[in-house]
Image (tube, rainbow, N blue to C red; front, side, top):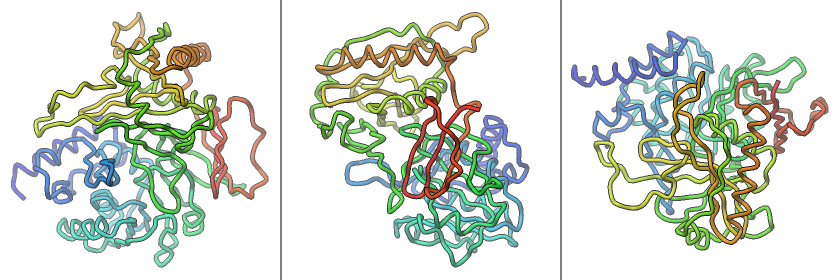
Length: 426
């Protein structure tokens, strides 16, 4: 490896460690040791050593289905996982193999890492990347990750690097009694990296939660969420499938058409930071609004990080945005859509910089009504104190369990095939 590649790797590690306040010395050492560019051989090294998620595979509609996750969220999740030398680790979603290499570096030769991916070509590429980078002992399996990998069980740790809607029964059956499990959990359009530990009563409870965003799991454990392309680069995510809350199927063409029209705008008189909006307001909507949706826009970006082309960004005022992407929350029915928009404003006294003045923009025949209802949700969220992920707890009960707590109107309850999730503030 050249000195310049080593410097790029060290700069990335330093940025990630500082930005995420990585606690584990083992995770820090792994970030400094594992060469990410070897896991992205088709990319210029300077691009591989940015703190960016990089899509490596797309489906027929152009939607990303495999990637190298953003190094910052990798570091956060590995910190959550609390790895140690000698542990046996199961990873769901091999991707490029880079995250498995970080884990292998931490658990060392006395430990074992198994990474499972549903796509044969992705698994084969990950295996080759791991060998090139000096981690040939990682076991790469092509299979549906919902089944885990019983041949190497039991595992001390399980981590998913894809968004999941359930805790697979197989994972829970293949772990040790004091295991930890970290998954990006889908909560009706909002996603949190949840560290689960097992309680004395047998159910699993969150030990820490961190906002995140991952591609969704495919295969037998795929959740009801559906991403529907509207036009190149623009899509809508429906937490409960393509049938809308009013009973109609989503008409993607009609929705794309109304988004080209002038919106009906409702001010909310609410100011909040982008993370507050997405994970605080997102959870608020998830618990209260069956018409909730999320819109995502991916913008073409050149090698220098600048936008390419002249296509108008539909989500130019989205409250959450990054290099080449935009995301917002909304409400959707067969008559239109309303989405949250945000404009930068000067912070009020005592308020951190980066506050947004929130509005609701409605499109289509129902746009005015939907915008007014979305604005009302935002105001109610403010009146409740703008609750966010802080103080949130997620309990996961096997579907046959009888020890689920009494529920209140503020609880978000999500029933999946294997698990009942109860999300509430403590």
